[in-house]
Length: 268
Image (tube, rainbow, N blue to C red; front, side, top):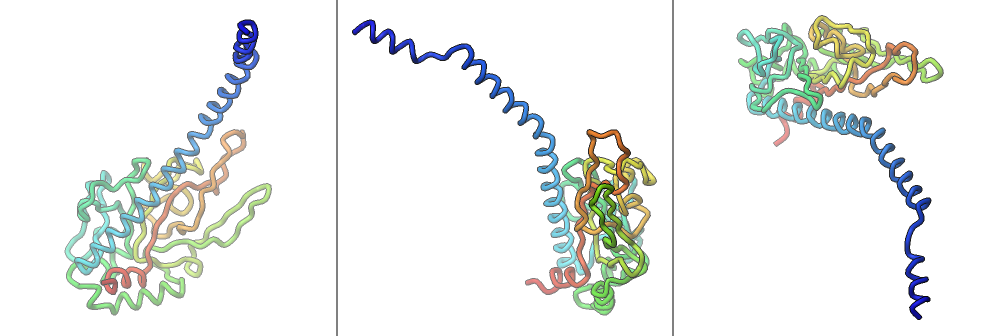
């Protein structure tokens, strides 16, 4: 009996070959996890940034509902979080998110970049940011702008582009137009630069604006930006070819005039 017991007991161990195979499999799993980590982290940051922009938009709607107008952008080169206006008129149409004016803790995205905030037009914004008029009570200008919003045509003020051609073949080409007939006016816009200068062309007036892509490149000086529906198109870093001009990693959130009025003035 004792000999049989010893024989059975010896069969419970692992050979060196079996242990080596287990270690190899574990090593492969760890390597795969590490290689997927950057993409997973980027996806989480993208999701968080989209959530941040939606929360900012909700804060703007709440401010408009409480005050009867939208806040002006923060026009400081180094954002201090407060709106900049001269009387009833904003000092600029496109600047940074005025988080202090809205009572929020900061105005940055998941990558630590200051979020850009734009309102329809600093010089002809009607009731949107005029602090002497309650846009929920005097809607004449808002109604007029809403009609322009619905027909997708406005040649001035903050607006978003429209995709006019797309070719995802061997040489991908995605074109977005900002001409009057193709663009759409919006009441407000929020823009995150994303993690990098995806198209690697360094456009923009300042170090900060060089991080934007596509129609957002001169974000503090222009008035036409990319539609929120424009998806990320990133270059293949494993190739030696030039970075496609269509590469893009910005995040955009907008609100139309009718939506603003409905949420700020009609929602109980």
